[in-house]
Length: 397
Image 1: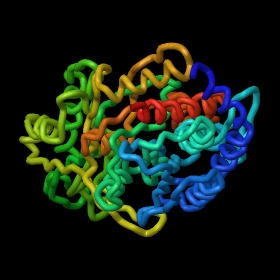
Image 2: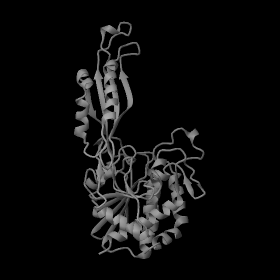
Image 3: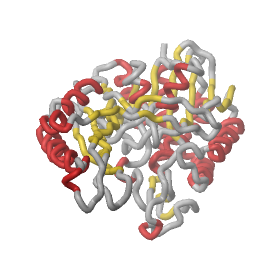
Image 4: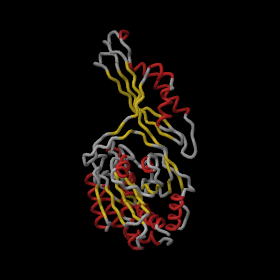
């Protein structure tokens, strides 16, 4: 099959690029994905998927085939905001192609993966869709705000549990097999307010927080790297305080922590690390693992804790080997194999549910959330070819 799928994918390049430009030009912040979901659903229907549904959360699920082996491709269709528009040299919502590069918000993170996975179907129809496979292509929602929430809903409520999941987040066309987890926590201290003209009468919650901030910085420095995912991290991303007025001593102080979790680090170990800090004990500070409870674009609220588990599979795992074989069969060479730096919906598929999961996506991680976000057109074509090859690989008897 060497180069055959790629050659077939090249024939669909113009249609794929037009579709990609359309969906990149549709703004789709988290919880505001309705318009782009409907456009993607229309493309699935036009391409002849057996079933196209939008579930109650707003996730788009296209199905092809009805075989016993269930292979799912996941890509989120929400994006982050533009940020400072002055940093963009092109309109983020008027996608253009220049010198083989497609620009626009969401191009790499990660509408490219969604578009390429949708366009795997024409290739599979051309070579013969395997009768022992069911393929799902999912355009999931709310990932940027709460990775994995969509798949918690799909598995628990839609009752779709694939045998294997391929995440289409950008991997620079490498096969990825895991990444660090993460969690969001809040540390809070309490004080006693009084008039700011006589602060000695009160107890300033901000001053109580100061040594905690210093201890957290030191905690991050002593976290040790662990193979194969490297070092976990903890950083303070926000500081807030409360008081009766700006002429009063603060009676409350809160810091927001972004904790990245490497192998062996969990919610329990990370909370305990903080509780064991001398400054936390001295201030009698409270540690809270935060929750996410924001309505989707369809109005559904599906609360979850902001704990996103680490996951990683060895290269020898059978489903990773299938991905490696599909790459070799499709492109005639060995793939690079690695891990993401950022987090994906794999925190749910692999981290929570233990579903064999891997990643392969067009575009580069470094362009995620970046001004002038971009993706190579050839990456889109190659990814579509790989996804078709992966389904064929799982269809082998």
